[in-house]
Length: 160
Image (tube, rainbow, N blue to C red; front, side, top):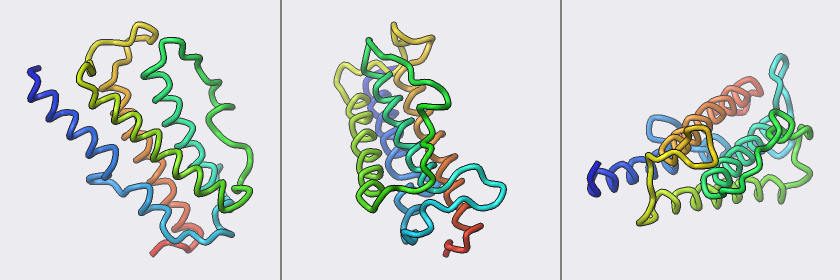
């Protein structure tokens, strides 16, 4: 792929990670959730909105760490990826989780935008993963869980 094609691909990946395109953004899915509803788990649903939000945060961080760190140490699945607490301890925890997702996503995009970024060569410390794959995993994973947030909001009667 030539340089202009790579730049075009990076622009599309950035758009996918930040704007949602055919999917809703995380910000839109979280907008207007009453504080008291953030930790409610509807019947037959294993997680609260808070737990999904934190899961997204943990996953984005893990992919960022994996993508830039030759000394990466894998997290334990599922224990390190899902919080046990159903609700955030306070509004600051909720807001910090959202801020961290945004920060880590921006840092991941910075990896994509580096002049020496190689989207296609597998990481020497991985099992065939490359930067392109990890960008797609973040987008796919986030869109899946954002959809779950909307479904939980519908079940709780707090969706528009």
